[in-house]
Image 1 (cartoon, rainbow, N blue to C red):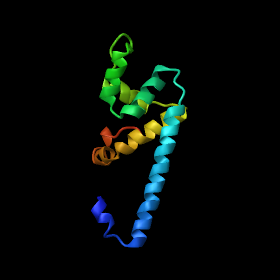
Image 2 (cartoon, one colour):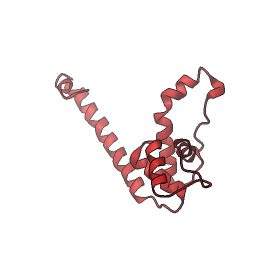
Image 3 (cartoon, one colour):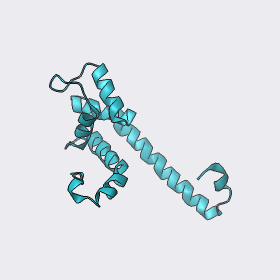
Length: 125
């Protein structure tokens, strides 16, 4: 919805939209709090925190490589970052990042329902 459309909504609908936006804003603030307060003690946690900021696996891999990190003496790739995101983790940041990653992948998951043999594993909480 753009700014002009808001003027043509009934007042009750506008109130509902404001409530939705308030909820979305509080979710974003909570996400920001989780990311900012996350303790980074392992390479996996560094990767997850960088992904929280960049939201791009290729950029995270490039940044990790620029900072001298490797996996078994090999440079990071986007596939390595995805593997870190999909892996099991017990900290809150990992669970939030994994959930957001899967939610952004839902259209792909729905399409993969046509091809069940290619469907990825779902989140394990």
